[in-house]
Image (cartoon, rainbow, N blue to C red; front, side):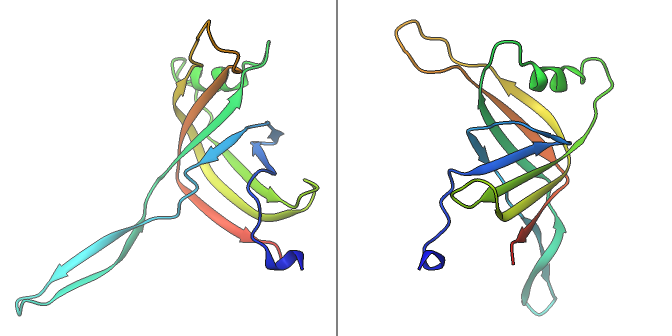
Length: 143
């Protein structure tokens, strides 16, 4: 019966390099190819897939005291010693232990970081957002 329902999106694990980091939102796990267009001399127009496009991924997480891992990563750019990392995002079953779908992101690096919006009239948690660029995303389904 459970196999006839779609997988919920609220249970997932994000690994950056070899470290699991708790994020509350991940978006941009897209696999996109360029389109090559060819027009011949007879007026025919052909389209076919071209090169795999780079990927823009956005990760959002709550801010915790003393946790500067994402800031340290993007700050490496200013020091000219940036380390590209592979990410693994696994959508799990409801227990959170068995991966059902896993996206592998190759050679990701930060391109921007958005600090939390500060509002003295709100009781929302502070959330930071990290935008990454990566070479490719691959998807593996559990068997």
